[in-house]
Length: 203
Image 1 (cartoon, rainbow, N blue to C red):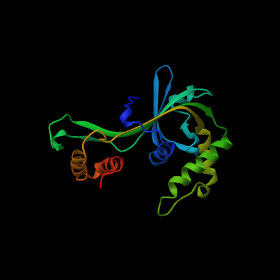
Image 2 (cartoon, rainbow, N blue to C red):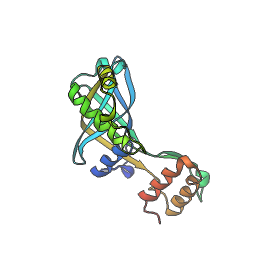
Image 3 (cartoon, rainbow, N blue to C red):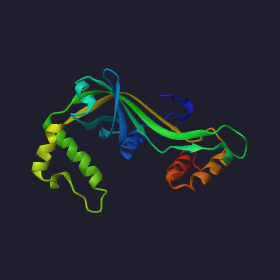
């Protein structure tokens, strides 16, 4: 990861909460070539010590290489948006504001019993946010048993974690406020405006 010091995030709680807030990530491993899969990942543990849990389809090309000790890179991405320098009170270079967490980890395949436990955590976490949730326990058992042989669960043990939040920290408050005004005009960039405001403690 390109990791400028001004934008580094070291707080363990920030990183743990970030993963929970943006769990759909890219998992990259080395096969005969680099292989990437986009999957939901959940942290297991707490901010001071956690592991990652997830699963892939056995028809996925990554399956062949997912052995105990396989190294993987997980890329979690937060709010991001293009920032035009035409919004600045002065002439400058346009940029992109974003946040991300990269985790290098070693993979350990899970047993079917562990996989079911992980699926229950994953499904119930997201279903709890639904108006009429359908929890893992509510699914027909025959449906579950049909699908379990088709996927492989894994645990990932982090050994390197990098987090970054580039949200105009090096710019003046006047510029930060002006950028937020423009980002708030667009529905899909409001979250970036909120991130800039929070990161720089704008009033």
